[in-house]
Amino acid sequence: MRRILGIIIILTAIFAIALHYNKNVNIKDSSKTVTFWTLQLGTYDKYINNIISEYEKNHPETKIKWIDVPYAEGEKRTLAAILSDNPPDLVNLTPDFSLLLAQKKALYLIDEKKLVQFLPSLLNTLKYNDKYFGVPFYATSAVTLCNMKLSDESPKTYDELFNINVPKNSNLTMISFTENDTLLKLLNKYNINTPAAINDEKSVNIFKTLKKLYDENLFPKESVTQTHRDALEKYMSGKLAFLVTGANFLNMIKENAPDVYKNTKVIPQLTGETGLYDYSLMNFIIPLKSKNKEEALDFALFFTNKQNQLELSKITTILPVNKYALNDDYFIYSSSDIQSKARTISAKQLYSLQPPIQNIKNKKELNTLSSDCIQEILINNIPIQKALDKFSQEWEKL
Image (cartoon, rainbow, N blue to C red; front, top):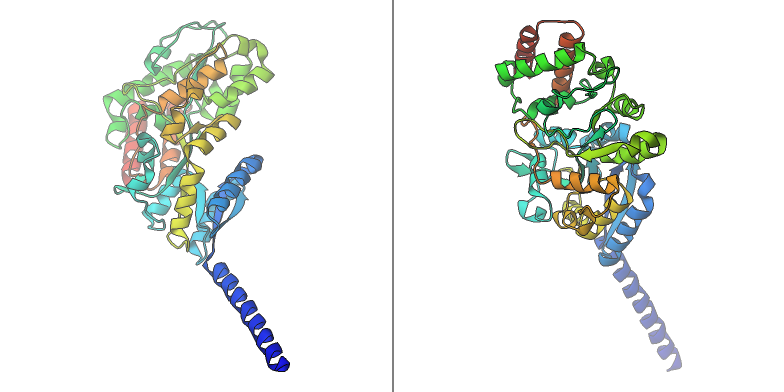
């Protein structure tokens, strides 16, 4: 009898262990791992890891595997991963490259109803054929810095700026004409954003003004070859009266050129005839081949909720894309600090955005065309109408 009872006890224990093991296997099998890529955000590892921990605590069935990719390798590695059968589930990219992937039908399209927490003007950047291909992450919108030692005026538009007189041996401003889409953004503020518009009378007059100011050394000669960082160096040297740049550079000016900083005032970004402001945006995309699309989207929406966006804005100089975070008192100017004023101005500008040039499948090639055109006009002295006619024809081919 004892022997039979012992056998029953042993069998019961084995059954309990097996049941417990099967239960754990089922839990393990049902869990999902969302692979999440960011672009060179390792500096903010504490912030990101805290968000991941909180999300995993509230979603025990989902694990987040975070990988930070060097910015320079982002596009190449993303493309290679998307072409494979096992891409990451959520990737931090620029809208331009994201659009290219959307045009190739490589991205998961997102229901508009899932994106209600974001500023509508920013969402338009992530739309192709009336479908949303990405989730906004963060934004920036440049302001205008004025060196009051050289000019105390406060121009609102480029037209007003171009008519301001500055002291001899100083420059009015420096526009990095050949850097990315700088020139295209300026033209877009005048609704010059199609092959037909680029060589019309309005466009010709703008280029005539740019040529005049360049020849009179009101633009540094380096404007045609150097970047916004070089323009910042010029401003810190006290040579530029005005500079349109990111508010994030104010701290650099304060540390490296305190006298210039002391004489700097901040005004809104210069506009054109539209009265609207340009901006830069970073976003998340979900590859079509992702095995965890819904989980990736859910995490992206959590990552960009009001609380997380507001915290990111306070530890960086970026602007939130979450409309509820953007409404926070943190973005209301309440002191004499020009960095606080710049933050307020930048945030307000996100409500009045100049729509980017649409339906461009070859954005890099278009940037190259604009760079070639301005160099032909400013350096090689090619007749403006001739240069713009060529630009228009090449743009049409794109």
